[in-house]
Image 1 (tube, helix red, strand yellow):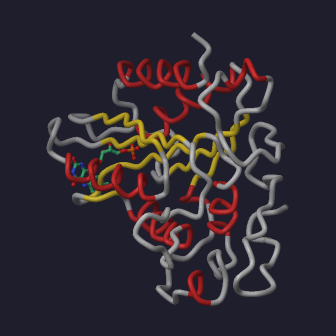
Image 2 (image 1 turned 135 degrees about the vertical axis):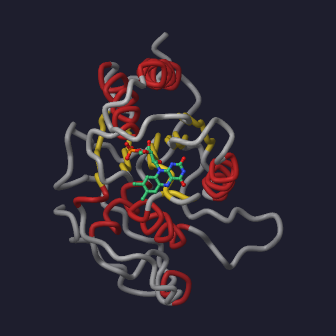
Amino acid sequence: MAPGRHRRVSRAGRLPTIPWKNGGLVRTMPGTNRSCFSTEPLSAKGTLLIIVNILGSPRKNGTSARIARAFTETAATYGAAITDYPLNTMQYRGCQGCEGCHTRAERCVLRDDATTVLDNLYSADIAVFSAPVYFGDTCGQFKSFFDRMWSLIRTDIRDDEDSSRLPHGKIAVLILTHVDAAGAHNDVVERYVRNLELYGFEVRTLVAPGLRLQPNTDIDAYLHAAAALARELVRAE
Ligand SMILES: Cc1cc2nc3c(=O)[nH]c(=O)nc-3n(C[C@H](O)[C@H](O)[C@H](O)COP(=O)(O)O)c2cc1C
């Protein structure tokens, strides 16, 4: 299915229809209809590990993108299927606050490239979220996408119920980079960890502080950490 084209939810109250096949921005072949993730070794089970790679930075070879790539390329060598979503190249709007996802449908009612990513999160085992820190938050491209994830939240819950529409058992890898010293943006890290946990993700973080402004800054230590995390998560070690 091409980006921006989606199956429709015909009636409010129906479960969202999830396109299992990714389209358009696929770099490596996805293609399974599994919707949940077990803690058993995935490659040992012979099932395809699906990774959705959401790239927030406008710098396609910037620090956060390179750390994300170290993660996904390592995972790919162990058989994971990766779909890259470089947000800066995609057409989407920020959340309109219309609450259509909680009144008229059980998914975002906007139809654009972000809808494709949101739909594909249902079938992902691991979602990589990477962004630079801009003025004490994530960059605008990332923040606008993140706001759209509101449509993955249920608002009709009782106390003991789950707030996420996503199946549980998924892992989020949160990658944040910035120039300020280590710890300077802990509030940003903690806030996004908390928000991702709302969606039921188990969150792993890769934070690269104290960088130079140039995209080609030496980040070898973080690239190694990302590769190690990928190996750990696909249980290949
Ligand atoms: C508009 C703008 C705002 C920024 N604001 C901050 C900031 O508040 N704190 C900080 O530490 N770095 C800030 N930076 C630096 C970026 O976070 C840093 O260069 C980051 O590593 C870029 O990541 P990227 O290469 O993945 O794009 C800012 C950079 C830009 C362009």
